[in-house]
Length: 318
Image 1 (cartoon, rainbow, N blue to C red):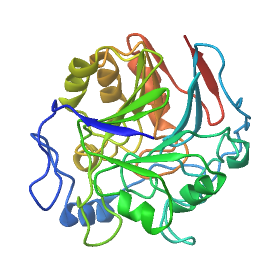
Image 2 (cartoon, one colour):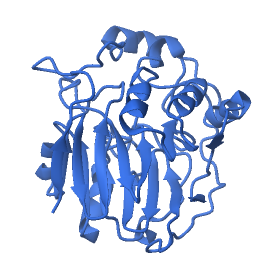
Image 3 (cartoon, rainbow, N blue to C red):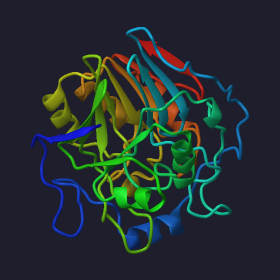
């Protein structure tokens, strides 16, 4: 049975009705969205890329290594001796509430869902459709023996679809499980699934504490002071999962998504020994071309190790 604990380290982020980004820009409003859609000039991208070699992860990791497998987008399988953890899982064809419209995947998942090992915990960073995919969560629920960890205000959605057990965390709260602890930490983003629920639920990143190492999953986030706050609260990260995609045009996206250059800065601020790029290469959600984020990241020449994995690829970290 998991237990929740709270230690106040981060600024307040709720005004009594809606959540907000403290001391940072808020998500673009309707007028900016209309301006973006009217002026958008998306770069050419292939409709589909047939370059994914699917892999089958081991059921468990018996060594002291951290095994990291990129499935697609922000879906990453983290395997340590006592924990198999999955982040923001999506196996659906579209990141959308409707099966026939909305952003369509350009690459297949790197691991078939039926080839997943037992999953001890699923981490959901926020309620956007490319991060909280109900169809995928129902399939994971059907496999059994999985806990779902979500930000404040999101649990009701999962429970309404009989998905659970669900542990809901505010920033600063932690969920203790056998073999690992999940800490909820700030992100600079927003939430929305409908026309009238903007920022009614929280968004977050997570620090995973397991085998005396700290792993950071950023979720979706803009660049900001929260990276230094997280570094101060937990110390250097053994590994960080940092988003690099959906960042153009900057006048619109900078309040909610990092550019590759900003992801490199975050990697350095977090003192991460290794960072792995996420949120790119599968769904086209902004104006840059599908594979521009990883090309731009390579041009940044980050200090230390910043890895780009293809869907289905893994790396082992000691």
